[in-house]
Length: 167
Image (spheres, rainbow, N blue to C red):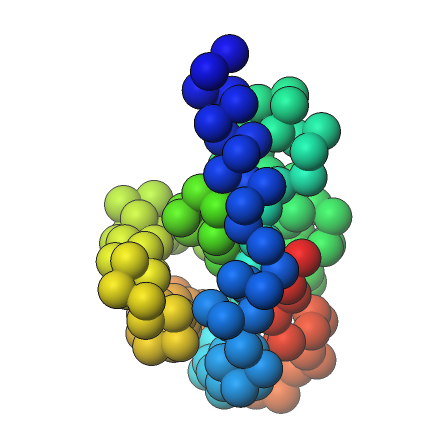
């Protein structure tokens, strides 16, 4: 019970103000532009969701970060792209964790070990307080990977918004 209460306390202390300091409007704009630019080079759809803390009921039920990322992947329709090439980068500030969830076509071509390296780029940068630079570096890695495996093949519709979501 002590670990659960400590986790709830950690999430309760992770305020929206902390999230705004980590991801101010100019950082969110830069992320959106990086996603837009990257999607010109590949057929995948990329979303970034930042969450300050989990909802209380999810915490109480012991929901893990991977479970939460998968739930958001479904909720935001990232699985519902024409080529089944959606990618979610989920950041939870209270847990200091990053999860990447991919649709089935991406999962078949890019191994989880590669995605863990992208997560490490972000978490190491976040530990130094470099949210802007670390996120853009990770997006560059992701866009390079997706361009290699799913190169653009002409004009296509943008199926998902490029602007990051902050919950």
